[in-house]
Length: 79
Image (tube, rainbow, N blue to C red; front, side, top):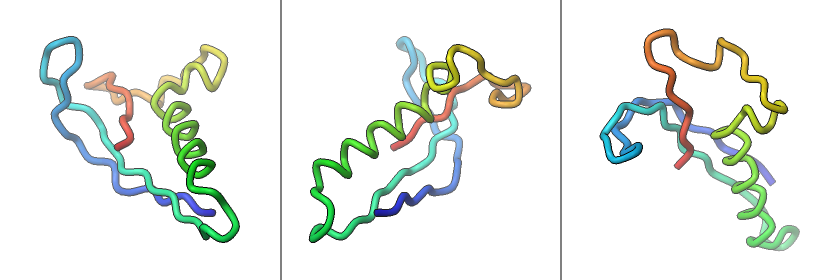
């Protein structure tokens, strides 16, 4: 089982009805279907996505200032 993370890029996203720039990264999961069920891999990918997109929940409410860009406090979105 492996996780593949792509390059972080800025793309337009709709947030609360407005189009805003957001940092976006592609996340992929590779696995051997003889060893791991695809549903388990999808669950793992979902959990990784949630933890990356909402780090304040992962870190118990504390997000380091370095997580946010100085000019744009935008969360990272996985696709």
